[in-house]
Image 1 (cartoon, each protein chain N blue to C red):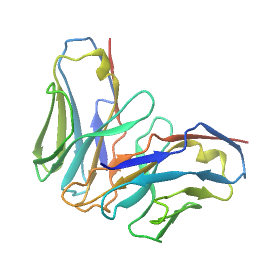
Image 2 (cartoon, rainbow over the protein chains, first blue to last red; image 1 turned 135 degrees about the vertical axis):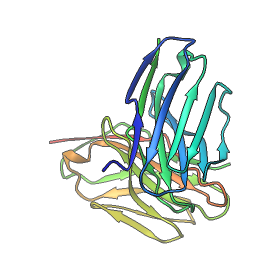
Image 3 (spheres, rainbow over the protein chains, first blue to last red; image 1 turned 120 degrees about the vertical axis):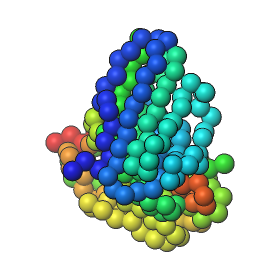
Image 4 (cartoon, chains in turn brown, cyan; image 1 turned 180 degrees about the horizontal axis):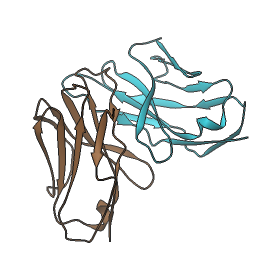
Length: 113
Length: 113
């Protein structure tokens, strides 16, 4: 059973397009996250939702919009894709609490051409 | 703000060598500290954690001790294996209502037979 799953695994698209990445967790967690990993492997938080409520929104362009239809899902929609958006995007989930382990999905490699 | 500094890689070792990856942090309050590992082509997995000063986290032969006086959380393993080849991330969570992880830049470890 996959704990945190993401679709698609690979996404190749052209500049200016709009695309979505989906994330689902079956761990019963109430907090979900999106991270971006750049080509140098640096990881940075983008968004976090707790019980469908946005609790972290780092300095991310407005073209990125997360949506959480329920506690088990957190999707990421990206408008007007740019070359600099090329990266690996990881979804994660955890139970509430600063010491809680975050469980990561396998990642979505986005390539913008 | 919070920050994590870990030693630059890459690190290349022979099998059965001793491993140390240094990690220091800056944070307000009393953060929880983590080491995550990313194997090639996969998402991150929690390797170990410590939630208060002088705690030692350990897993799969890896250890790290939460040192408040030196704000450090160095990762060690006495005898590395080829299967330990991966990218290692030090991270902290400062709790409160904000459970985001702040990551170091990652250290690529390659173990040769």
